[in-house]
Image 1 (cartoon, rainbow, N blue to C red):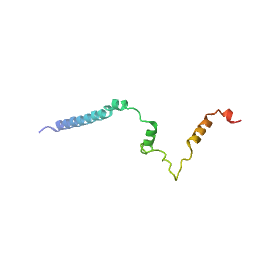
Image 2: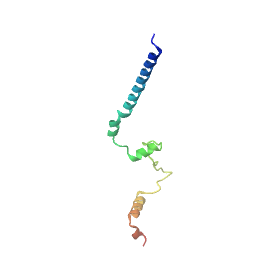
Image 3: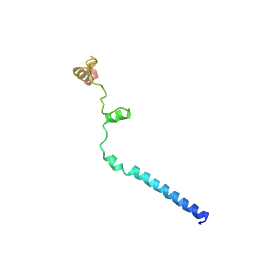
Image 4: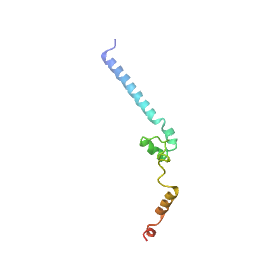
Length: 94
């Protein structure tokens, strides 16, 4: 039978070996996919926003208009609003 101090040293070695292997495994898990992740194209901003808000990025944000709920503005109304917002402020104050 081995003396108690030898068993203690062996136990410390085994525990150190397990902790060291765990640390190496954790580093490999964190570092190994680093290049592959950085090589991916970035997610579009609107899709990332939907994911952060907990929404499905494949679903449209604004539901399509139906006969019961027509679109609030026509494309010509939106074009007119954009034209007005592009005018200089001095010309609008006359």
